[in-house]
Image 1: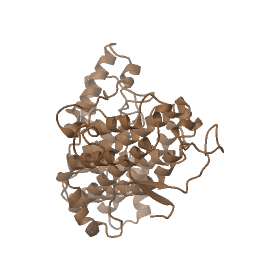
Image 2 (image 1 turned 120 degrees about the vertical axis):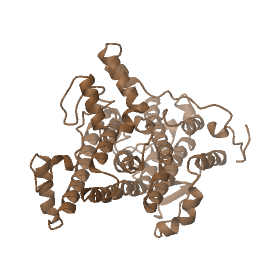
Image 3 (image 1 turned 135 degrees about the vertical axis):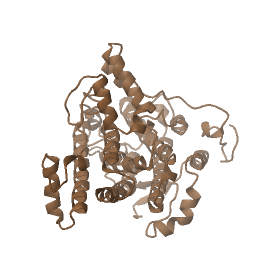
Image 4 (image 1 turned 180 degrees about the vertical axis):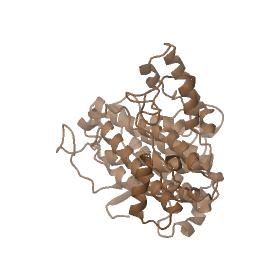
Length: 440
């Protein structure tokens, strides 16, 4: 760790609440710690704390206040600035913990122990990233500029479960370990973009948090891409239990949700003006889409080379491009390679939200034919689940004139604090001030 990076912990009762949350949603953490050196011998062991990179630029780097000192306290900001910032912090914290809740359900389905340990390490680091956002919320007094406190926001995030997180991608149940891996390759990649955009944040505690999180995010992307490379090469020669069509369907499932995470592609300008991000939504979204296109092209190159080992990588790249364009090469057809859907397909945010586009970007009419198309395009286990059924219900209502597209976009998870007798459901209030279990 760089000498410019400092460590801190959040107040004890909140730290203990996060530990209790971890015991529920990452019960294998002790097993990970016991085997850390065997799988990650060159990495420092996991530590639940916040890292702050004190070497960040002290002045605002973009926007109308460029060149002025960055905000170091909430009271230095006006209400609009604080509201925009806190919305991003809460969403970031929600995504970190939300992904853990998704991954845990299918973690045991990994058939490769290394893949499983990589996912487990990623879950631990996502916990630390959520903790990092809690540090941002708890190290300042937000009541001077907002209607709520950092303590209440931390408790709200800790109470969220799959189905009521801030962003849609984190409300989808995983159906197989293929979801775990593809999620890392696609959705964590959006996280990389968001962290990179926020590293210039005009609020210094936020900008100090981004660098350490970004360094760990690189491993999360590898956790997804590395197994996918292996699986496409095996599938190309008829090995393994994961086929190219299965991978294609899961790409179709997750990429639209990744695109939605950037928000409406027509927006984001106000965040740039206020100095919280350096790129607008649409520009970042299209950069992301192009990056995923490059990754999929690498997969296709590997498929061609697995089928024809005599080819060099440049030769295989050229052949893959021609096959995707409609040519054939010694039995390899377009259906045996991977493609990514266009930016209009299966969207729930932006100008193409809740519209019937196919993966090629052609507009179609919502009805039985399009529903059959979606059932062929997406995994069987997904189209019978709650996420797709909610989408289909909204599309039915729009087609019947009972719901507008604008109202459908505004339909978000009901963010309500979970109540009940289980102490984990009220994650902070059942931990008293000295960190022991109890009721305040």
